[in-house]
Length: 467
Ligand code: MSP
Image (tube, rainbow, N blue to C red; front, side, top):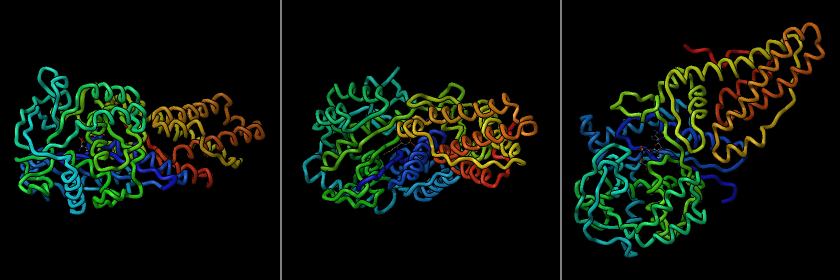
């Protein structure tokens, strides 16, 4: 398929409701999707929930709910959070969907028949938070750095996937950017990990009941990550027939944060190679949100939930605040105070004020703007996923325009020199229209409102100030 763009987010674990980190990744996807749709490309946007495994079993038990009821409830919370942020995906996949499970079982049969899965004994240090085995080098003071947990020794009779076979080919595909990893520092990290020999991985679980049963040994369930990866294919309606990849495959972009890059750059492409399917084109790894300099965590009690941000600042307010907070590939720190200040400065005073004062000053003169297209430099930044940088560039224009009104004392000119005032108003309105075009993927409702208000020469408050 030509001019297509297939973008995915990780599928999120349903052990808890969606938090800001999940919201950020999904929002990044939504902005790109809106951008490529405006460019006229065929886009498919997949997101969803990862519902199997020990972690979810435990959470459902603690909530005293059946697994089905618990997962349904959580999946709904994710859908609602995305609707509140005005995120529009094409498909929301759940790994507990019957179609997904059947396709996964078909894949397992193929791998088994190809001799890429074998029975053996597996031993490793397993972090239940990551649902991954850790190497000694991953641990600091004996603990996993992601979850600050001491990994458990896992030793069981197991089916293993021959991951080790794919070491050299993975290295080559990543080095040559056939499977591109950005930012480059992340690619380096993966390549340095690939210098050590890759171990075969256990793909079966004896003790976990909530999972996909192995078709060749029904009393065992599948390791949750294998189940999860295949969502990127089954989300396109694929039934597990390796002779036929779905239309939108390969993924043009997998979005994620650094926590899950390694598995995405090893196990996932190895599975695809094993199945004879093309590799994803690109993996983009964004940073982490921290709150007041600390990792967001329920134990620390410092979590900010996406719904709270939407409630306070509106969907577009929340979208702007999240997207303008994180530089390409870096971590971003937020706090309620910073969010309030940024909202008031950039949205209420910056953009909102510019629009309302310009339209008011134009009340008697009724100047029409010139039609504007979005800026090409900006398109480049968006395509490079430099959203904060793109927004900074747009806000430079907004700030310039507000300053220009002050310097020219436009409110005096409209009376004393209407001809000069008309010239400046045309320039300003054209600039605002251009800003609105550029903002369409980021804050779509506001961008439309700006265009309407200019057309009708009638101003309404875009962003009420907050305390
Ligand atoms: N279920 C697996 C992914 C399977 S994909 C085949 C998983 N789920 S998760 O719920 O833990 O989500 C991890 C992802 O959520 C990260 O890769 C990132 O996209 C997002 N974030 C979670 N916490 C984050 C921050 N604090 N900051 C930014 N994003 C982070 O891993």
